[in-house]
Length: 155
Image 1: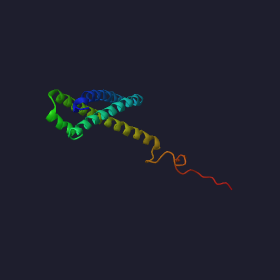
Image 2: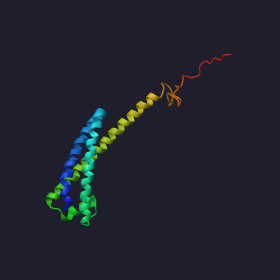
Image 3: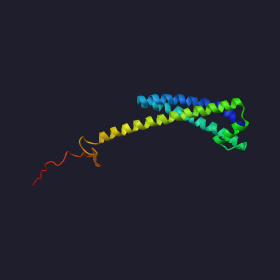
Image 4: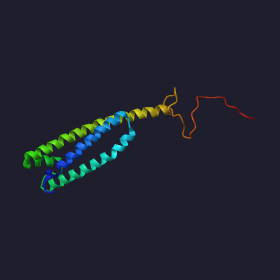
């Protein structure tokens, strides 16, 4: 690849596809549909891997041209060498990436909320009614009783 802008259309396409998946993910998180979420994850992983590969190609090209091999280098290259169409593509990619980042942030909050809810439910299942934070079962698998009972001694 000899031009840093060569990957921009493919990167934009994948970010837009990722946003669509994250929108679906958000709906599934709200619905607490774990099975459908599990089906969505492999597609997200593929898109992210493709985005990483494309950005690495762009960074390598920038580095070969004497620019910083990263987003700052791309900003510098766009400012000094890009035509109007490339500036528009770059701006569109940055806008889409910001939208994806926001979806990721919100989805992370939804995941954390569901995790906290699940932990509360698990703790309630582990703690007997009226007890203060004691586990329902001991290390040997025996349940803790309701207090002292009568003990019989055989002679």
